[in-house]
Picture 1: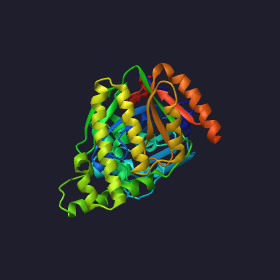
Picture 2: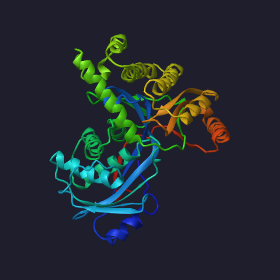
Picture 3: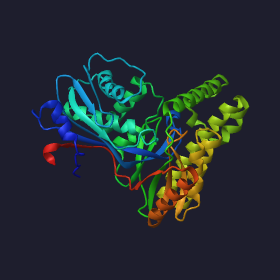
Picture 4: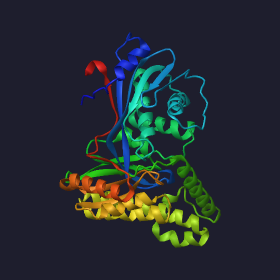
Length: 390
């Protein structure tokens, strides 16, 4: 597959390098949507995710020190890769530094690059924009450095940049999905063991993302809920439980959990346990082609995220209710960290255009805002190309 370079990237890179030297390398990494498995990733559970047709591109060449330009932010950053320490800060420059720090942490000797990045993954919508950036840059650095790392190792490097260097209490879903997905498939991840599998998505349906246009501080939501889950696990361990993570608990044990934990923590655990169970059931249901039953799991997931994990938002709830009323919709739920961002709907392919028109009209009339809509088949994961191949 030939990937086109977005307009302006070559000129931007040439303005930095003078247009001299080796031909640049192009990397395209997709954003992602969480189809099922809300906040199960950092609890060691199962997730179903899919890539979306929104990307981050990195175009770069080897250089003496790292020199990166962001076309989205109109900013540039330069640093030496051997003098980095975790910052706990979250912006595109820190994510870039985190990539080099993660390579060094793993004792990989890598080449500095001069590169330009550009992305069209919506920022603040729960669609994995930071992970797409990290995966894009990690693959660019690895390719230019002639490192032959397996794809899962590259996904882990991108994850460590965000989790350890920048201090975002995220799971590994975003980076794994952007790196490892196959076209037309959902990616199933067991986060405790890092096992993955690809589950074909029926050609009769499409995934439609509807953005509330309400941005939210995902890191704050993730940090707070992760802390609650860690506290719940610690209290259960003190009470004699032998679970390495909350996802090892099964639904039949929830009554015993309620007897140990105070109400808020018990609700958090109930959500994680039941959501993990929904994903496991959902994988089998999709393989059997029972799309209506899978859609019902999506509705149940949204209700649990709203009532038990408390990460929904009134406009997320509104969109899900509007989606339920549309012809051809099988299921709908919030996606990502929550508290704003987007929902995902499973829609019969022949009704997608009608769904988009109706959702846009109804959301505008209720809120005065025009929702951003994205639809299509999962395009697969990251692509790396030498520009001479294009």
